[in-house]
Image (cartoon, rainbow, N blue to C red; front, side):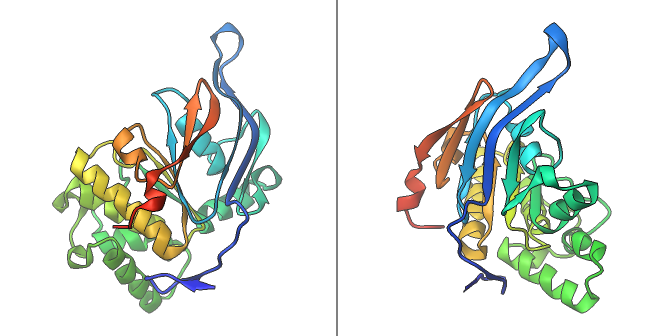
Length: 249
């Protein structure tokens, strides 16, 4: 058993966090059908930051949506934290997304009228966490992402990088096992994007979270522990990143 900087205990296991076997997903029918995934198989090791790389339209978002339980494959299976998503009904998928998977998107998705702290606290309110415990958890998470002094500011008062940090803190609110990030630096400049990617890597190492991050930026790929590359709907492991042998941020 290990304990992260936000005071959360987590277990160390050698079982992969994500196992994908022969996933197929198409959109449309007949000659106009788009075959987004053509038999994708891969594993995401527990406790690593894994980059999912591929050109635009390669199927990265489709794969993330299937692993996150936001979409259903035509065939094949995805298993997250030992649970086969195909075995879950709608309520089971909802609980999986709420309790065990955190999502970070390119567009941040923050509620404009709420402060940074209130945005991070939304998932905890939905779980009816007592207010004192919720406030403590929110404060810990905003400290973790370097925004302890910006708790009361609204998204419009924050930079793009700060907004994405709030989004990451919100995704971690319910202590997920898996963090899924779809082009989380797509709207940021190069320097800020690198800072966000370094933050994700630090979160993985300190909180025991596994992160699967889709990115097209080759400089950010170099910060990952492992790289998976999508090519024409088929995924191939691109090897181990130098990040494994370099000191953390």
